[in-house]
Image (cartoon, rainbow, N blue to C red; front, side, top):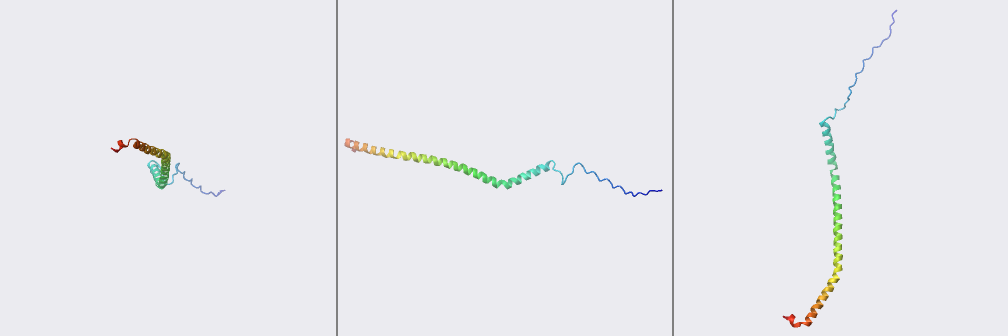
Length: 112
């Protein structure tokens, strides 16, 4: 007696994938350097107007602070001159009085 068994063929074993699976190649050596440089240049070009605007604002702030310092100095000078003005007027009056007094005491001497 023969036993016929329904044997099915054994499917082939699938191939073993390699240990390193790369999609689109690997970034080795100069490829990575070029990619990083390109990204940095792109970011720099895109952010340059923002960096310039921030720098201008910082410079303007320093200029405003400097202008305020000069304004305070000028206000101090004006205050000093306003305080000195009455003293100067008093000295002019005293000088005029001294000249008149000398002119009365020695009229002959002043005429020469």
